[in-house]
Image (cartoon, rainbow, N blue to C red; front, side, top):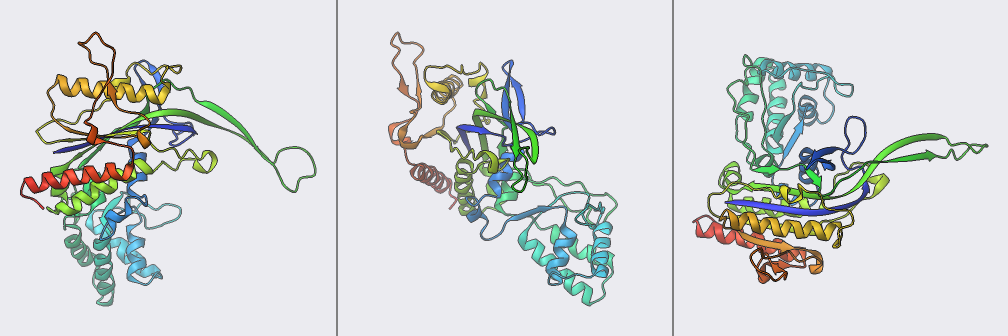
Length: 392
């Protein structure tokens, strides 16, 4: 079973996700330049959001290069000594994780470790007891290896996966750190052509006696209507959560809420581009099928002067393309559509009829003007399918 979400979201002027030069990220698609928000940015904003937090109430992952300091702080009440930190760092080196100091942490590891909070607490207890017993760094590494070898059955790791390469000669070498992600996330891109603009700004010195600015600079920004696509492999998610179907349903529910209600944080204090989606198409595919992006609905960019407006035309393109691809390839799926108060219905124009009348892409009972009802319907459908397959 695949669960897919397609969002049309128009942002007011913003710089949500910057490149190495500080400009809004972009891409070339359909022969024109588009605004872009990377999938990494979107996934992080979702998994760290208040909307996703209820899925992590029991346990969730921590991704950090500061694992040595984190463990030492928890093991020694926030006041580890230099000796304790050095001993713990040597244990990680023995495990096959190098130390690569950064300015704010001399014991930072050279790789990011994505570990459940429960595992961190258990490891911290091992560190505390090991130091009391004057355990060697190598022996501590062997103890920590047993903790790290436990499969991380927590929602954020189950969704996003992890891939960690360790030194083949270290004591952690036998651990399978790899977790296949249940979530596939596309880079969001604008449905139309976008040209970045430049904001020339100044800051006034409140105590200055003259008329000059205290600070002068430039920053780039853009406004764009984005297409976003997410696909969740249900069986992979359930497997990653050790068969916990109830937790898998909760994970999907909170993911959907976060995907709709969370915005990337880039320069939001300066632009406040807090614009929720105008339309969300949810699809549940029960038969063996590949994930399908509807990005090509926008290969020909939406005209900036489209009669329906950029948002309306983008949603019209989405509805037509989703129907054409699904019907053309014979893909069976349950479709659900949400637009606030039904502002934008998801419609299509039949291609084999002379009439230009539009018809709905989804069944009437699967159209929603209230987001809470949309989420409720999708999670209820997941529960029905899980029950039908013998899982609860």
